[in-house]
Image (cartoon, rainbow, N blue to C red):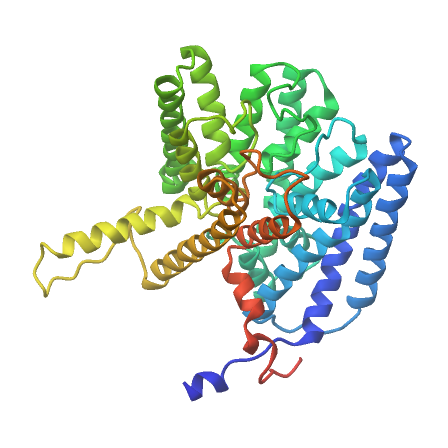
Length: 488
């Protein structure tokens, strides 16, 4: 223990500030589109606020990024940087959002929900809001879906160990294809192409370019913010637009590395991907289970039940959060099905939230291995395998820890809501939706929600987006206090 303590190092403030400054420069560029949209729509107050934020962030980035440090970033430094980036990005958007008449708590909630690609909202209506506000919400989700970290690695961070660690901490834990910086740039290109395709598809079905952009940004990022109060239900074009948006959500829930493999012509790898098959299978099960609930338990007409179940199942499993029907009055079993789908989420290395299907599969294989050991010789070696590969102890431990941490966060948040006398099932639905960064709601999330509970949901969204463990590292005392390596 003493030797381990001597080999552990606290973070170096100078390193944090340098790379945080680089993030700020990227973020300042990403804040320009809302300025442009506001100016084109003659919304000068909004344009001024977005412009001031972009200028301030750019100035801060210019000052902090001047440091000449070029050494390696420690793992704990990378984690703290990612936490800081998401908190800072959420904070800077509060000021322009308040131009829409939002109270501070609601502006904070809206900003966190956008940055974490959740889609929960406490606004009474969005249809009386400005075009720039509706675009900025969707744009924030698009940025948060890929992660500011990936943008930064792709644009400003030099290749090497530092880039790799930042990418890993940013949530892209799939096997990196080739050089880390090259991978980040390819991922950015793929993500952009997916969005363009979604915009074109939605524009064809809906005939409304602005709505197509807003829905596409939210769908590809599996965010769920919509420019209409009724989410997808009232969108132009009807069910063809629903289907197009759902396909975009499903595309975002598939590991992005598979698109890169397909681009390189490695279709065999894509076809054999356990995650791809698992995402599609889990989504299919969620749709069928939801259909059974709607048709058998609520006597929904067959055609309506099929369409609604497909949309709701995809929305919950991909953690997109779009809705075509009011979840509030659904049967309790339907809510439980959606809760399970939201908790599991999409693929590891995708824009989706939840604990990820990969970790669920790891847990299932571990459970099966433990059962099988009861029937084998005490001297027999039985190691769990997944997708034809032996699962390492570290993979199993990581999956178990993250799923366990999610469960703890959900339980603590749920008990808080129950203590405020909310319906236990609806409270569980709301908390899982926030922690899974989904955005579906039973109606609890509203402008009338007490500020302490808005704060709980904000924490859930941030913890869910960064998978809890990263935040624990940022709060760990030895992360901040102790021995430090020399700067080089």
